[in-house]
Image (cartoon, rainbow, N blue to C red):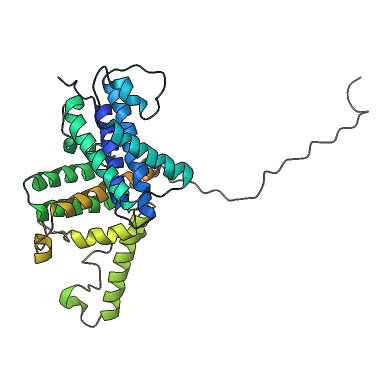
Length: 337
């Protein structure tokens, strides 16, 4: 019977799955960029082996060589695919130390080997299916994680348009998370100006835009630019964002609290592969954006310190460097004798 999983082990397994997914994405790039997939697959397996030794309580002074894990773990569990993993390790060494690029066949073989290894070993050692390990556990943005979990329930039911709508909402929430929810007005560094609201005067939506064609264009440009700047400032890849916008529906919020989208023929035709990619994109984007959490903390501390002071803050004038007063000259003949 597998030992129960603690939260730290779940997080480490989620990180393993993240590395594995990175390898899959890299394997789809053109040569020679796809070669990086070999390193990611290897890193995923090596991290996984470390989690196994910790979970099984195997004592070791330091991490062994890659293939040595099979002998180290053998008494507790007989790991499969040793020969295939040795080929993966050889391909990594050839790439890293000799500059030998792996072939497309080697990369695909590594992908299938690692996938089968994780699917076979995970339920036997950890008591859960590999697909059940959720990378959402790595996220630091609670509302983003909540929406992704809600979206997954629709994907599990086979409703991929609705699942993609949830993923789209999760990404919107990610950008809002770093847009200064706690400030009045919003002054966070990732806002790039105030929000453009539909009721801002003069209105340019629908029939209100007649005769205001230039202003309407500028409004659209400003809105799109602001959104792109927020994403790129958080380290999110813009090319992937463009793909994300194509495969997900535009979800619009209404005053009654509902959020709706048009289920077009294109959105109806989206598949599990589209959903898996879009979900992974949001998770990766959230992990990249988490680098700004410290900045968000500083902004919140600044806001809390300055909000509603009992006495107005005073101003000080800059006067240049500190002026050191010359000591009073005293004659050596003066003084008491």
